[in-house]
Length: 73
Image 1 (cartoon, helix red, strand yellow):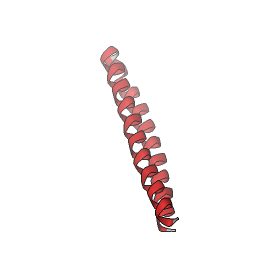
Image 2 (tube, helix red, strand yellow):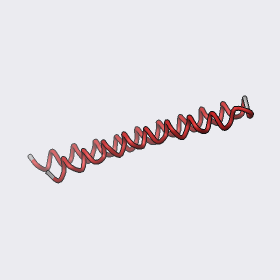
Image 3 (tube, helix red, strand yellow):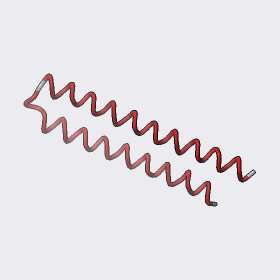
Image 4 (cartoon, one colour):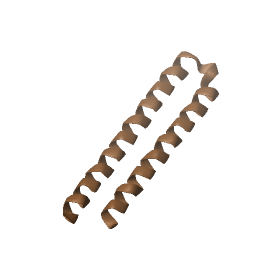
C-alpha cells in the first residue's frame, strides 16, 4: 500500500511541475505579446507577469511539498 501512495505522490509531483511550467510559459508568452503591441506599457506588464509567476511557483512548491510529505509519511 505504501508503494502505491509513493507512486501516486510522485506522479502528482510531476503533474504539479508540468502545470506550473505550462502556466508560467503562457504568462511569458502573453506578456511578450502585450509588450510587442504596447512597448510603453512594458514596466506594468512585466510587474504583473512577475507577480503571477511568483504566485504560480508558490502554489507549485506547496503542492510539491505535500506530495513529498505523502511519500515520507
